[in-house]
Image (tube, rainbow over all chains, first blue to last red; front, side, top):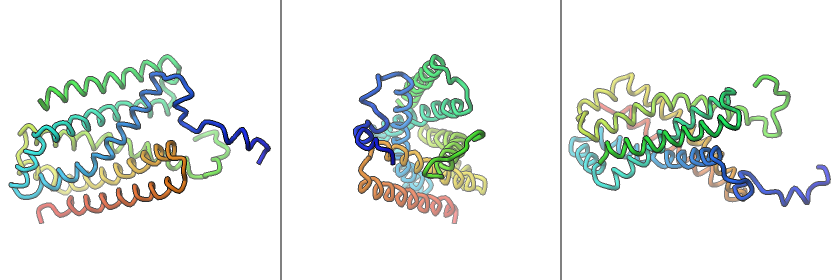
Length: 130
Length: 120
């Protein structure tokens, strides 16, 4: 190891939220992580719904009631929005990996597009569920 | 991947990177249809018999199996990246990731058993 141990210790660790000024691509990236966590937490709920819906007819109607009650609606809305945003921004990330939209300005524009897609999904899914 | 001379000290980061993107493509193709099915059940477009007709054929079961393998792998890698970024204390991070991995595997096994038990 070179003799930079001391200064290395005091370096801020990634993702350095307190160091950099908040920018739109950074928010898009954070929202990608947050929506990913929401979707990971939806896995048990999906399994709960799937088991119920494919079980006896009584279980099916119980699940339907659960989905139509407000906690179920809210969970469906929240995960649907997270899914749509995560998918659009995920496609954006893959395009970035492939070398598209890498310039600073196009990074900002595409970040706005992902976020706009998330807002649009929130409105459309909201009007579908309520 | 072209032009890379050395892979760094972990030696396997590229594998994670690639698998994360490969599973992303599978999930992007298969999860939206599953969500649409859920919404169709929600608004009454599909009743239980019609739902079962769609999911309990061989194709439905195969696609569901592919989806769950890709989804759980993708979720594991994604949660791992987040945990490695924010949980700096190794004695907490390692058991936490172990728990996440076992938990996702358990859900996967349960999900598989549900998917392949339909109609029997």
